[in-house]
Image (tube, rainbow, N blue to C red; front, side, top):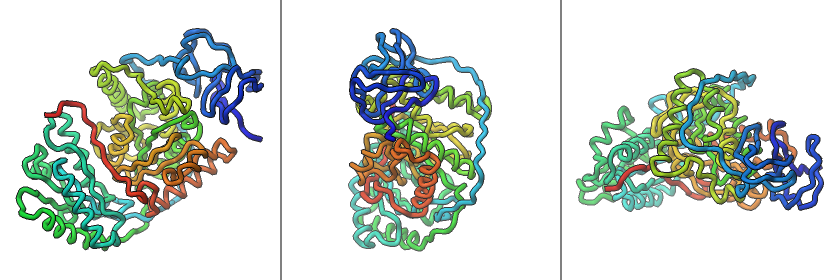
Length: 496
């Protein structure tokens, strides 16, 4: 029997249309007899009871805002008649929630690259990274040259990563640029790195070299283009040597406990919190039970669901760090004169998401039910296994870059609208609905839409786990096949 609607939580006073439902259709839902007053698009909500003006609209068992006007049962509930309850900074109290997950150890492995310092990568790529945007053209030419000479064989990819920064920046912006570039240079998915500088930029090569700390000097090299007569030939000499070293690396068996995944969503729709995001939550819990690591970011998309995360913090110190994580981002919004609830996007609204609370309650499902074990500022590298929270905005490119930079091997990206981009680690797209997967096979890597087509979540998760292990072992995802690779660095201040 075709599933037409879903009431997610027994406390909910709205249900979600799984398929487009026509006006006049009669439905019986948990004792509610409802005749739809208007057509309800797939992924959108309709009222299960009469709602008074100002009454909270409940979905996922939590308020997602309040009714702007009185609504009758069977009417369409959307961004035009639901208003966020969010406003300004809040005081929080630590009310720890016990976590009890009975997930067995399975002893799974993947094929990865063991680096000199003991870390593990899931790719063996050669990266060309500029300290400043002035040399973007040079790094692109060098990458093209090495690909022509080698045919791209022997390593998983040869990639240049242009960006606009490294000069004319002050304060936090300058430090953020240095941190992200440092994190890239030290990332284990790179078998070798050439750092290309101009020479006169704020991000001085000698200072940046010191900023790196310990690094493998056999696999990380510098080129200062103002100090050589022919930067292309000098760069190619260095790259040939790096290629010779990296191309000898081999995959070995690595415990799944070494895998680190970033959790991200973008172009979300009304199915995100029903299919793909809960799927990632189940996988995240499984990975953590195996000793692995997952990282949740998009702090502005936690607003409205932040207390769920706060109360899963292992201790009060982590709770206090999470409070700062949330309120610091709210202050960032307010300092620019922007409301904290100015979200979701037009695409989110078209897909059935009406308020930021609704988006957040769906978004945070990506991290499952595990304890929060770590909280990280923007640009920090992972040092704690388990579930971590990372400070970064919701912007897809900035957030995905931040996840990769903290040390995630792969970004798991759920989407209901679709997006092609990838950051500098594999960026796997998981569709929330089967229609998107069918329409965009060149974008979507895994379809979670089958979960509302009667495939049990546990079965989907087993298939998904098998697929993630294949990707960690070398199978390419679509952004890699299409050579869609880019970085974006968070900027808050002035440009000189």
